[in-house]
Amino acid sequence: MKIAVDAMGGDNAPHAIVEGAVQAAREYGTSLILVGIEEVVLRELKKYDPRGLEIEVKHASQVVGMQDLPSVALRRKPDSSIRVAIDLIRKGVVDAVVSAGNTGASMTIAKVVCGTLEGVERPAIAAVIPNLKQATILLDVGANVDSKPRHILQFAIMGHVYAKDILNVEKPRIGLLNIGEESSKGNELTKEVFDALKRTDLNFIGNVEGRDVFNGKADVVVCDGFVGNIVLKVTESFAETMGIVLKGEFSKNMRTKAGYLLIKPEITRLKRKMDYSEYGGAPLLGINGVLIKAHGSSGAKAIKNAIRVAGESIHQQVKAHITETIVKYQFNYTDPTRKKVKLKKSFKDPHRSEGTGERRGPGEDVYKLKDENTPEEPEKKEGIP
Image 1 (cartoon, helix red, strand yellow):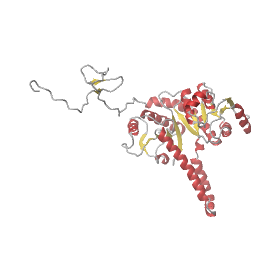
Image 2 (spheres, rainbow, N blue to C red):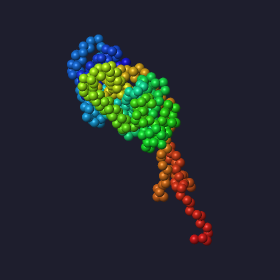
Image 3 (cartoon, rainbow, N blue to C red):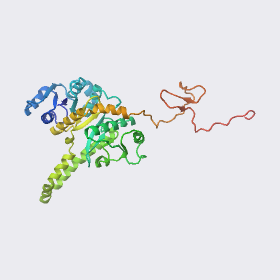
Image 4 (cartoon, rainbow, N blue to C red):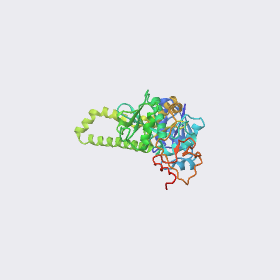
């Protein structure tokens, strides 16, 4: 097992990336390839005495910035650190890639270079969010901002596999993020996905609300990437804000400071549980490879844990299990909201059957040319005008 690490990606690159990689190599015995500007990476690597560790350096002359558009990264930076790292997956040199760099660029390059798994149309980013019991897998959190119902069905299947393989949940409970628990709630997208999920053999528990992401009601929560990214950013902001508020309250006077000392162990445990760096990174599920996307501001600890998660994904064969499960649970999906249309008289339908008011296109349902609700004209009799 070998993992490539994008040494130039992220707000704290390359020093935090290299430090985290060295920690992972020491703690987990992982074989790593650091990809980036060689002289810069080697200079950082020397600070941590990497002798005896399985760490190589692969040169890449370009860097994708956090503000670069995915199309620019793909077309104009063919020798960027993230592109070279993902190319190593395609060539079979490494089994996974870890990056804290530009999310859009990482996803686009991975999809183009590696392709998607059989049965997967769009990959999804899955975030592991701590809850009252263990953790909730929320997907998609930003890879797709305009998902179709069939895409969210695929997200549910991929989340099911990830929860089983990585969180060791025997029968993951899957919830659909909505504005209410009733099946009648939501927009056309959520209503259609709700009906479709009910027809699968997945452990679908119905609609869940925003609060259920944190109370442990569901193991997997699926939604469109636009909604999921907002939930993720609000979660991160709230945790950060609460930390600042608590620090301010405990620093007010000697009494509050003394109170803090009494509950410091509990505060430390809470902080550790809510710390994203403990969970490593978010996997991009559905690509023909393993890509773990670490937070852009990741420090050494987060990178170390992202490498651990990448190793677990390889060991548990998440990629193969997604393909198997997609085939197992996938069904022929038809759009129940498709409306029947009345064709204008001037339109000559090549699929219209002679002498009938029906048409049939390739793979389509039968549509009536005439609106069935329109009353028929009374039959005219001879001699009556």
